[in-house]
Image (cartoon, rainbow, N blue to C red; front, side, top):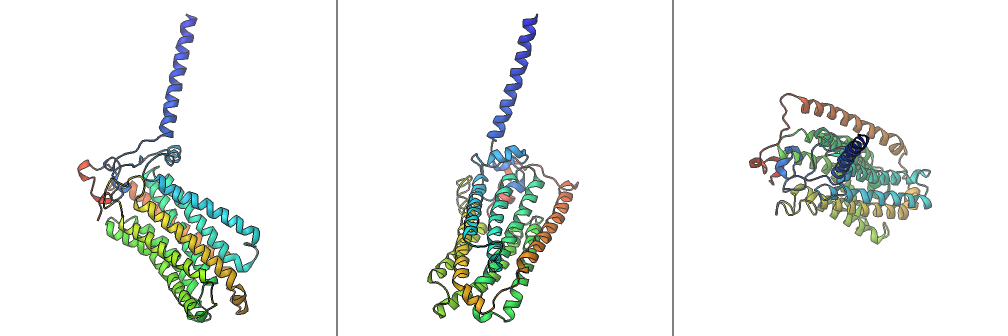
Length: 367
């Protein structure tokens, strides 16, 4: 009798161990789904398979980045560069007083913003599969990262690459204030795009939200490049190639993002690797790297010239305006999160899965 009880007890414990191991296996190797098995908001144009579950646990979401799915490369193409830029910032701090020298504060802000947008992006792509609301909130914060990066880029351009003939004029007085407005407006418009049902309007609104800050900064960079062409000794020769590299890869990345190429040319062929969002991430990282190198060369080469011209914008743009912009963007995201939560919980909203016959409608269809 005692032996039977022991065997029964051991059998029960072994069953629990098997169930626990099965649970760990499910966490370690979460399965993927086809496009008709996930809700419409999770679908992407030209991507047929490789979708994660729309209700992963946090552990499953983390484990999924180590498996083959359509988000894993999106995570790594920003997480690894974020670590690299963090290492670069630490390395620069050993030879430059990044936090104590007022002249270097804009460069420090830029480096932090570059690390920030990559890190936030990798987290957003990791945890966007927890729930539909989590997906929206993750990318709301992703928009904050991109917006603050545009602000860091504006500081970098204004302090180290601003054309000499525009210093002291109207352009120098409105450049940073307008860049600050663009930073908040970009987050607002990007979050608003998540409420648009029409795919074309959604894409246009999201692209436009970040195209405007890029164009505003680009206008000054183009004038700076022309200045370098017209006047010898204004900048280092290598700086021009760095600026061109930055602009080229930025435009190339935006092209991949907006066109959904190459997956729309061959749906199902680039489901887990090589699709447009992977290429978009890679392009913007390369663009950021070139931009950082150009800014670094300009601040080192032009420091004596800029200081002789008393070109030393107030550190308050970094120490006061930057935290204020982060706060405004955070408030914007909280407001949109509230309305998104209400929308998803409204009686009129349905998140049910579409039938297989509709699998190429909505997000899964290439325009």
